[in-house]
Structures are given as C-alpha cells and as structure tokens.
Image 1 (tube, rainbow, N blue to C red):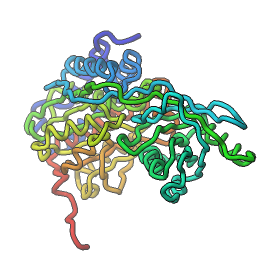
Image 2 (tube, rainbow, N blue to C red; image 1 turned 180 degrees about the vertical axis):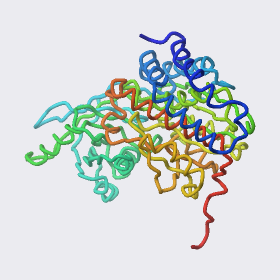
Image 3 (cartoon, rainbow, N blue to C red; image 1 turned 90 degrees about the horizontal axis):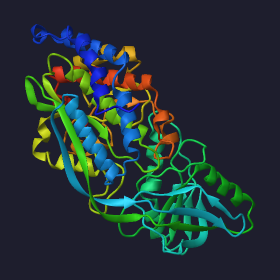
Length: 484
C-alpha cells in the first residue's frame, strides 16, 4: 500500500522519539565524547529495528517510476520530496531549480544484416545523437578491448561502425566499472576521430542476462550515434566473428536527442545545529534516474538512506551541534551540452555556495546501491585520530571496517564541492552485484533488501551524529604537501 502524504513515514518515525528521548537530555549535552558515542550506538540500534528508508524508496519508485533528468516525473518527484522533508520536520526546506536540456531516448534498433541476420538487444547511450532517418549501415570494425580501438590511426575506420567488446570485471568496490567507463564516455568521440559513422559497445555490466545498460556519453560536436548491446549479444558477435567468412555488417537506428529546454532541481533540507549552525555536513543522493527501470538502486536507495538517517537524528530531543543537510541532487545521470557536461545539480549546488564552501565541514553521498556498508573511508590524516576510534567503536558491530586508504571523494555528486576544498568521507557499500542491474530495466524495487537498507541507515545515522557532535576539523588533519 502506498503512503499517503508521507503519513506512514511519520507514524514509523514517531516511535523513534520515545525510544531515543532518554538517550540525549539537555543535561548531557556538555558531557564528554562518551555521551556522543552512547547516543550514536542507540541511533544505530534503533535503525536496525526498522527505519523509514524502505517506505521512502518504495513510494518514490512506485509513484513516479523512472525519473529522467528534466522530465515531468523528476520534477514531480522533487515536489514530493520537498513535501516529505517538511512532514519529516526538516528545517530550511527548499527546491532549487536550474535550467536543463531535456534528452529523450526515442526509438532504438541495432541489428546484424546480411549473413547471420538478427536483431540485437540494445539501448542508445545517454546524450547520444540520432542516426539519419533511414539509419546507418556499415561494416563492423570489432575490437576486443578499448585500447585496440585507441591504437587505430586517424582515418582507419572511415565508413565503419566501431564495436568494442571489452568486459567489465566484477569487484566489490566497483573498480571494474571505473576501468571501463571511458569506453562509454569517450568511445564514440574516439571512434569519430578515426572516421567511424557509428559506435557500439558491450554494456558496462557484470552479468550475463540479455538486457542492455544505458549511461551517459560525451555530448557535443565530433561524436557519432552510440549504442550499448547486452553482454550475451556481445558474446554472439564474438562467436560470429570466429565463423564468418566476411566482416559483420550492422544497421543502427535511433531517434535519440535533446528535444527541448527544461529544468531540473535539487531538494534541500536540514537539521540545524544547536551550537554551530553555520558548520554544515552535507549528505544525500541523486533523485533522477535513467528511463529504463525505476531507479531503485540508482539512486532511490541513496536518497532514502540519507533522509531516513537524518530523520532519526531529527527525532532526538536535542539537535546536533553542527548542521546536517540532506540534498537530493537533480540531473546526475544525463550529460549536458558543452560546457556543462555532467553532474548539473551538484555543480549548481556548489557554484551557488562557492563563497560558503569553507563552512562545509564534510560531504558524502549514498550512490552505490542498497547492499550492506562494509567499510568507512575518512579524509587524509583522519584514520589515526580519536574521532576515527570512536567511529569504529560504533560501526564495527555493523560489520564495518576502517579503510586505511584516504577518501578522495564521497560519490559523484560530491565532486564539485570536493573541488572547492570540502573534505569527503565514504561509507562504502558492497557493490559486487551492483553493475548487474545499474542503468538497466532491472533497476527496480525488487532488488532491495529492507534489512540491508536499514544497516545502511544505522551506519549513516551513527556516524553523522558523531561527526556533528565532534570538534574534528578534517582540513587541519590533511598531511602537508610538498617534497617528501
């Protein structure tokens, strides 16, 4: 049953008030760090009993479905998000709107013609241009790796369709996707530089099911219509290559493109700090999604986790010393025409607060699915501090380890703030199977385990309380730079 104006969310979180009321009384506020640790432990345990996170992501994905950046669905979801923030009791709720070019997928067809004629399961890449009205047909220049494509000289692919079959390696931290993402982001441009008229890549997925992954590619001049095919279809091309007497020929058709000017928006709310309200910790996720699934793991889960964690803190009778702000960023997925390119919502948030970046204590987002958090990454210089020891005392019972490598970012939407000098932390989720579903039609609510979601909420709520209550200055802990 769907929630009605978030009333069920309020009902679920109301129990947190009574459960936590005795944990943080005004007389305890001035106590030493031990009080903050005990309260964080209780926040952790309360979240494990059941949070509002699953109800949030369920309502978001069921009511609004896919939320392509700039679409009416994304805009309606943002209005609902602001209403939900107000009903959850967050302060300073606002919807910050910015201009956006709306990209739509239209129709997509990819097929082998001639010998071995058959359709392939394919999607257009986000931001890709359309083919001519009658499509594109050409010989396939097939490369096992992206490096092989880059090794081709200019003019070597004139009139051909470049095809890259490189697999994405499964990894808990997603590094396989990090290694192959340039194949999608830069591949069409590199193919065009060598004279190709179209571009096809094996989906950046780690599964063997017959659905294709979309995702953003470079937008602007000097590119070609670009498509991703499913992993089994990439393997089909491999088999045909072994047996065919002549080169494979492909026909590509797409009506994708930027169709009109629109707007996207960030949804912002916070729990204002009681002593240091101008010191801000920023958390969140991105509200938009691709148009194939319903954006449950990318990134409905992240917006739900961070809002649910902040709601547990808001329910306390005493607010945190520092302000904790949740941002549901808009337009994370679809690249924009130059010079904007990607992360439009995050760039808007950071640019509109550039003069206040120094007041941002730390930033992080949840944007890697809904599996359990397994490690904490802190800014450089913070891993051996009393703050880190307190955090691990609270997080270790959740199965969370301290990552000795410094966190250099807190997720894609944190990048513009990090570029302004804001320290980032990470609560790293198990992404082993994340790229089985990411950017596909199978990114749906059924992929989420409510208990794993609550483990995320527990880690976020506990860590945020400790950070907001502390005096830690991550900037001051940074190692000195210069000659070793």
